[in-house]
Length: 528
Ligand code: G4P
Image (cartoon, rainbow, N blue to C red; front, side, top):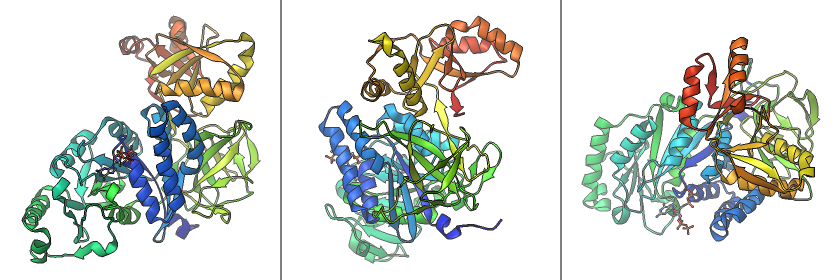
């Protein structure tokens, strides 16, 4: 097949950062943006984090909604590359959002605090990356502080995350004794001076580690470095690009984001090694980024700040072809063409001049309630991209109305918020209740506030005894009918009409699953 747009596709890198809160994601993001010259955006990233500290959690969420449309996709140029950094919400209660953002990237950067090793949130996000074999580059941060031994950190990553580590740089000491890093594949020494941001001129090319220059620069730590490298040559995995691209191996860098140390090295390796836009699977075929016909899918919907307009922005990842302002595209789920004249194209600093976007880029399309997460848009061919999951909720609430006359507005609000992915909605088979399911409880606070502000509905919650949910599938129609009859009280339909089993405990779920071996209980579900 002829490679359409080859140059535009090959120079794009679309990625997200995965980390546990406080590992240094915000700091690293800011430094990366500064290298790309996106100075204003770097400021916004910092301000956003500051807002989170300065105000209550709730206010922070509100503010975040404001800034996050602009900082949800941070686009910058670095060398000859066009980099799209997709932001992921930091709070674990919004992890479902994060999971979906990760479906729109081609690779990820994992930040680990050298004093903490692998932490829970990183582990969960890594599981998501594994679902799509997303290639990951690791940055071990905060070497300017005392931390775990580098070899122990690698062992921790390998064991906890089940991915092979291939160190591409190696730290020389840590904390007060931190002298810098040695880049193993470029054979360059990067010297660290505390409190001073590194520039390219601090790089020394030392191809032979027995070079006496090393002793002059590092003193007794030169011997330690030689010893470490010798050890690594025997013990560590050599870097293999293929294994990294398959998600089996992660190249590892060490540094200190706050000191901007090791960040350029990381960014250089990232643009060189990380994959460009990848081919994407649909229900019928794989779509290559080099195809001429346009295609894209929606992975995130963001409520707009302006309370006067109930407008939302749908974030669409372009998978093939070229987007031009004003073009028509087909919205397959509803079978209509839409004219995308006022899309926000998340592009470099100067937005006004940008009229085109390519595979790997993200565009923001105004959504008046017709676009759902997972929707596919193309030129003509009816396609449906796969791999955009919903996760079984772990928290549940029953919704009650203060004013029963508002039931229509409530229903409308809940359906739209569910389509946006802000919460999951279930309607029990045997009652007219509205049951909400969430992966994190903060989602419930957001829903109550948005129902009030955007739909004029005062809603209350009641606790409910459910602990988990599973989507039901059964090829044998007779068995399914039997299952439904026997378990009516625990069954509900989700917002898309899929049959769901709501269980009061994991034990109960296990018990029912054992009783009904023909019935499949799914923990994740693809959007219809
Ligand atoms: P996050 O987005 O992953 O949650 O982390 P963030 O970048 O906000 O960093 C968390 C804390 O770790 C911040 O300190 C930040 O300054 C610090 N930090 C980041 N990189 C490094 C590093 O390389 N070395 C050291 N020593 N610290 C680092 P804070 O006190 O929570 O906030 P702030 O007042 O410094 O902003």
